Length: 110
Picture: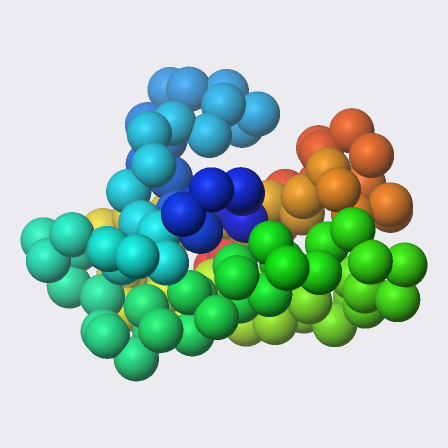
């Protein structure tokens, strides 16, 4: 899930917490993931570029939300490959996306 600031893009939510709760931030465009998660530097770089693109362009009238979300879903799938069964991975469509004004679209990544 993209957010504003130093490019946050990953949160840790426990299984008993509701889907709308994003939990604590664990990765951003500056620091990436903590080493304990074992995420490749290449994937961290791709996430950083993706979230920075959001921060720079989300409010532009020509921003291609479908393309941007599709890229985010691809990244989430790559993340799932890297974390395997240790974690569940979800993609949250941002509420800034005109097609998701309530911010309630969540895609579970298998």
